[in-house]
Image (tube, rainbow, N blue to C red; front, side, top):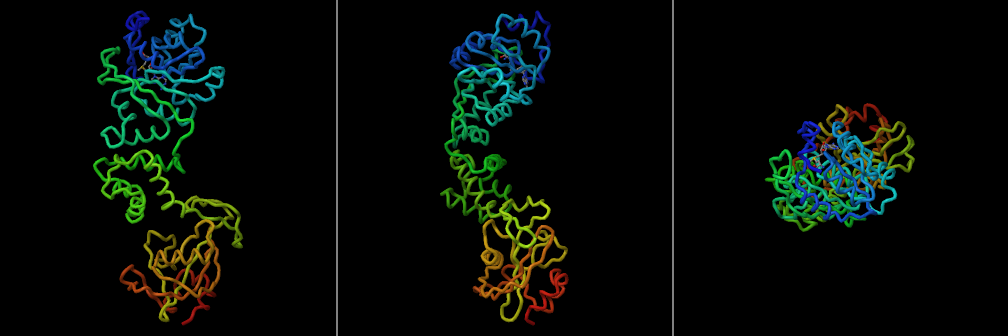
Length: 431
Ligand code: SAM
């Protein structure tokens, strides 16, 4: 088949919007097909058969070829030119919208292995590959793409080509560049060179992140601003919690000045897992019924939308030197219009009420508390608030100056939202 001849004979108008750059060089076609090592037990998926020049070579070698072409104008041309072959299924569909898994089950079920061999439409190379890797098992990909993208996919740690795309693909597959292809072998010639790469998905991912979504998120955001250090990129994403991030990097033996491109793929998996532990696990809370009996369900704190299910929140009034100690919280942190709240917070999953309270107060006030007495429970929307009264041990910190806390007397407390709603709790406090 001759590309130029087919275009002329069919008076075909090349569509730039579909990334149509058709191969004209027979040697390159042969090279792609031989690199793919296809035999008559293999099923091949081709994305964008175009005029069918590569498709024909694939049909000669493979058991069956399943080809997706978005451009309906190409379908009659392909059907006519490839009418000699009975092992072709041609689907006129956008590959990004196709149900490839069910098509494989239907058309390639009697093939030993399934390969993707294609000269990809360059404008959607990444979504095609990442989508397929995520959704279906393909034994091997031999695909042509823009040289720059190929270099990124194959990029090794600490090189200029290494970025979020390299990591996202390399954590799940081995990738290698097979050969470069000059721009001159296409009609029309694109304004970039190309390369053919081989991708082999691991049967089982060796080093799997606990939460893949978070892993992709960490990787993407670590490279958001390349000129910044890793820690600064992470702070942009996870809030200005430098201490937590520094703690994670120290634990992993990574310098605070490190740049994202210095971390290996395995280190990114560990980084995401550590972030999950440090930032997220503690956000898991248990659900209770309105009488504070556990329902045996755990959710992320922000996802509470279940009617008749509650989370436990402990609060604490601390008596120190005959004064009652409460926290002055940031207005952003509270939902009530009242600026003042009691120290305390939500209980982590599996954590006991008192245990959680001691942890929360320590985190928020640097006080050790003791002699705890439960004052009562109140029920808010989805929240069971357990109010405690406790003595505090001061650990040499001038609290009201150091961390913006406020000391109050019982008289001052009486206007607190909690006590106006539940005056019985105030009764239980000393003067
Ligand atoms: N395989 C042919 C060749 O090597 O000459 C054509 C390759 S050309 C770079 C890309 C092909 O993908 C075009 O035929 C184009 O119409 C098709 N295409 C573009 N977007 C597509 C999509 N979303 N789904 C399926 N095919 C698409």
